[in-house]
Every structure is written in structure tokens, then in C-alpha cells.
Image (tube, rainbow, N blue to C red):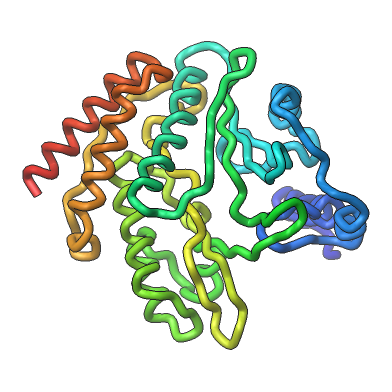
Length: 304
């Protein structure tokens, strides 16, 4: 191993060592390190119950090794109720804590709307325990207790195959279709555009390339099919540094890439905002915000 020359080098090396020592629960079908593989082969994942979630949340916030799944919002991964799940959580007092609790419900509702529209999504449910709200989402890279399925992110694909940074998922879909070393059905490219448009119309400003993944079948060419949707919620309204900043929502009209499906997607986005406006588990201020978003999108649809 090279000696780190910068703090960032040391952090990267430290993370690699940690993965090699505790890499039995990595994303997809990867198991990193001999110790990790031995631990995986030695036993089954421990069964966790919902009563354990508050202490797991405390451990994730404290940065205990192996307790957090990483990402922008605190979460942990466990084997609970006979399946592998990712659990996000939000607790505490104040406007920012209330907003994060609202957003967890938003993510669940978004998945329900997408499921009704025929888009593959994982099972999800939310519940409150002692003032903390939890959102539990099934992992699509796990099969049963010990089975795994390979996935690759759009970020990794872009770095290795495309060599540049398309502006959004829609343009990335077009570039994937043009790449000779990749195979993806036109209908799957359309799904990328559909989801990119839906994300825009529900104020999801967090549609980076790490938030879109594919199942992979390795052959002479890399054959791609989109995984179920995840991290689809109105992140434009997320707190920043613990402060709720109300930012405007301006839904974009159709473009050359999405004009063939924009109105269909917009109807689903209106359904999303309408359901949130009537969701009594949300704070009253956020319900009013959602109703305004519905009205703005309806106006944009009429003009388009």
C-alpha cells in the first residue's frame, strides 16, 4: 500500500481497509476481504426486530463501525422480519427534524405512486417509535437470507464507459444506447427518462448518478436493466445545515427528450402532490406547501 501524501489519501486508504475487514454487506454481490468472506460463510445474518431500531439509529448517528449505510441521510442496513432492508430515520425537535420526518413519508408515497404507475419499486413502510420516524425499504440487491444480485450505478458506468458527465439521467440514457460496449433495451432508456422527468416534477433535486442503478448480466457486452427506484423524494425542500429554507418550485415544461411522455408523468406527479396535501401524518405547513406544488404543476400542464 502506498503511503498517503494527503489527508484525503489517508481517508481513502482507511476506508478501503475498513471495507476489506468488514465488507460482507457491501452493495450488490460483492464481498470484500478474506475476513469478510469467512464471516459471511460462518453464519446467517442476525435477526433484528423493530424494538432494536432506536439503538441502531443512535449507533448510526454516533458513527459506530458497521452501523451506517452511508449517504446524505442517516440510515442503517439490517436483516429484519425475514428480509434485508435499508432503514432511514429522523428524530429530534424543531422545524428541521419535522421536515425530515415529512420527507420520509414523501419517499414512501412516491414509491406507492410509482408502483400504481407500473414502475418497479421496492416494498416500503414507515412507522414511529418513541418520537423517531423510521422508513423501512426492502433491498433489491438481496435474495432471501444469503442470496445476492449484482448492481452497478450510473456513476460507475459513466466513469468507465461514457467518459463524461451528461447533465441528467435522460441524456445519460441516450448515451448508453449509443455506447457499443453496453446493451440496454429502448424501453429501459425510456424508463430512465420517465423517472428523470418524474423526479423533476416532484422537486427531487438529488437525481445524481449514484441514485440510479442497474442489474448487470456480464457477457461480452454489459447488459443493463434498471433496478427498482430508490431515493425518490422532494429533496429540494430538505433542510440545509439544520435550517429549513423554503425554496421555490418551478416545474419544467416538456423538452425534446421527454415530450413523448411528459404529460403522462405529470399526471402521476400531480397525484403525488395531491396525496401529500391530504396526508395527515405530515406537518400542516408542509401539507400546504405540497398543495401549492400541485397547483403550480397543474398550471404548467395547462400551459404545456
